[in-house]
Length: 345
Image 1 (cartoon, rainbow, N blue to C red):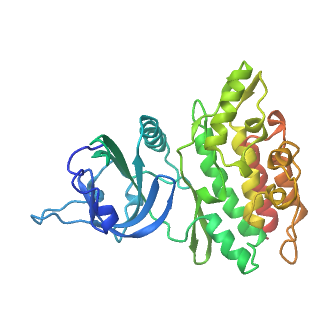
Image 2: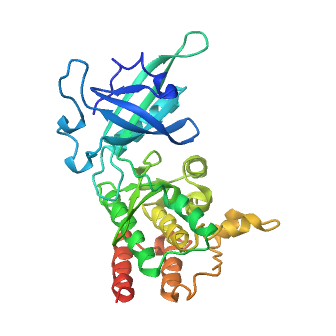
């Protein structure tokens, strides 16, 4: 899955015109745009599996790709990133590098990628564009589903909440099991793809590894603490960001339990559709940072009957402001398995 600079540069405009794009040796037809944000656009694409001379081609021939990830109908999701600086180029290369490390059913796999040089509009300067290819999940994210459910005043049943959450734990455990462990750093409903399955719980897949980094970091000075806070402000979504990334001590150790905080916030969001601290944004003089630093959780009216208290206590257990007393992912998995056993009967 190396980066290719050839065979593509004449075709980058096709993305905006519904044409064809090549990613290395494979050709894809743009079907429609699925979403956008910042400098990135996501498209639904369909693989064109025959070349002009009639010879066979296609992702299925790439032995580095897990056959389970090959689409039966040739449809995939393609992320296009417009790169306008060396820093952006480095971030995309980092995302590609980190994404390539992971292989787990609950982590979105990067199937192929290409980075191409294109002419800039001013002064004939050269910019870059990146194309990243993924399996497609057309049911959207957990955030999309939450918005729809809120409009309909619907809630996931307790067992479904736990089954979705259990899958996220499995994906994170894979990342936290590396040596050194990796933290995702941006676990939130908007980064969880959901696929509804008949007769089975929804499939949950964690995506977007652009903020993932080795999790363990020792902070020795105020300047290092401020540097970490600035990085977190840019890469970790505020309502799901751990307290130690808001107000980092000058002499401390940061580890993968920053993700456990975000995981606790996400469990709350699977239930109620939002982070446990977003209520302050609607209050006069409310401070998201203070609510997070003090772990001031509010429980909204839930389904009827409401979620069991054991589920609320599970969230509180993960949302410990002091990271040293927060559980590790293995502890969380043991607990969620007990809850699934209890509430599935």
